Image (cartoon, rainbow, N blue to C red; front, side, top):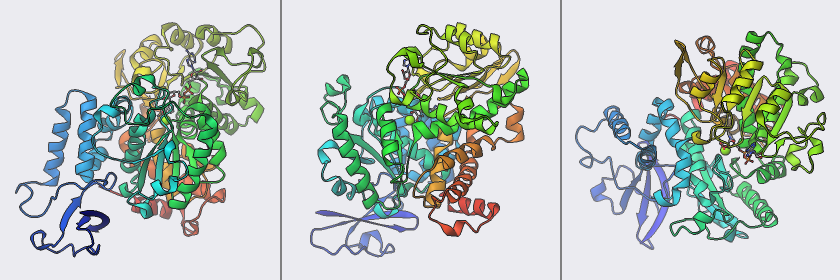
Length: 575
Ligand SMILES: NC(=O)C1=CN([C@@H]2O[C@H](COP(=O)(O)OP(=O)(O)OC[C@H]3O[C@@H](n4cnc5c(N)ncnc54)[C@H](O)[C@@H]3O)[C@@H](O)[C@H]2O)C=CC1
Ligand SMILES: CC(=O)C(=O)O
Ligand SMILES: [Mg+2]
């Protein structure tokens, strides 16, 4: 029997047809009763992972008499909550998405705060670590180094080429702070795209999760009989460069309307491929640009709170980074905008930023530095290497300490106490993921700063009462930026993702706090409002694309801002 994947939609449900070899592939009328249909009709419920048909459903008699969607969502939530371990919840949700995508996304949209940590960080980190063991069904595209020379052929196996609008692509070489996870990186692409769908109303069928397999240097995985990727070390950079050239070229040929998000490439590759492709294809790097955008936004709100307490002008802030990888340097680059918006020159803005890596303070006289650290390397220090974080804080006197180092506990009691001695309201952003690699926990920051810290972390922490007052941690995670950025890019059919568009996304997010959220000292809006926020971000991005001449949808130019927002909302997919 030949399986012909000719999907079409009937009554809101995608159908696939299984045709005996040699028969015509014309789909029968969706109204043909199942029993009289000469073909076997299969109902495919999941446009994202519709690579294998699910059993027939919905026809009369095939579901219990009292199955009602509103009650079923309560049932699904109860099943989810009955599981003790988050990884079990992840597996349950993955199966639900496969079997009933509408229900899955309804649960996500209605319970954003509860479900996001299960499909995204921190749980997605465990899902990646265990992917080869918990794998059940195909989802997404795998392109391996063995496909070099015929990548286009593999891409054309994707069942919904015409609908494809957004792809998250990882090579698994630096998944969150967990290192090289090879092909086990696929859940990160899937998880990010689920947030695009839930958080910005991107149509599920337009998303393409991709994991590139260039080998892995993870010895444990190479020795694991269940490992799902190629059993070979990573290929040299030169070979990977050729592979990436072919991959991006074939992507643009196969999917002419696709925006590509690079995700969790190791730092050298992250910078190299962003600069190699950003002027040729619509592509952005989430760890460099998305993280830069989200931290700029939270920092703007945090700096206002901190300056109210200290009386220092905004332009006087001093930012110390622990971690100088793709995320640290990406954020540092984006934070230059904060100082420039205060009227500082490029040079003055740069002088407000200090980097610390695994060797300590980054300064010119230290010796040879990786290319991406050069711009922020200090020219004004020529003493001995400085490695102790408390010493560095006492030297720099920062108002803000940002962690993108993957070092759990690096913001310890002496560090936070020193920051608190220097600042009435220190800005403490431990941004490493997943939660177990966070530089400090929310309770620690509150306790050691006596409740004064303005806090945002990469992964979520629960709110806390301290000294009789409720305190709310922010989540400084690129998940606030990329859904709206992607939506804006898709609707305005961009040819490129410019710096102006990323900055616009960031400012759109910073300005989205409601009076109630400001009253609570929040630096990011509540995640429950993500859809509205994404729409606002998309509008800012579209306007910036128009300004930069990067858009391809002239009809949006004539709309005023209100009409554009209405249009964006009307185009968002709802489960
Ligand atoms: N909150 C968010 O939205 C995002 C968070 N991240 C997180 O940022 C972290 C770093 O990501 P990348 O920059 O891509 O990784 P990376 O591995 O390139 O960078 C890590 C940096 O930390 C430094 N480092 C390592 N050990 C150190 C030590 N003991 N003391 C001081 N510095 C040390 C390294 O020298 C390097 O500069 C990851 O945990 C990742 O999950 C990344 C992107 C977004
Ligand atoms: C959030 C994210 O993109 C990361 O931790 O890599
Ligand atoms: Mg990432």
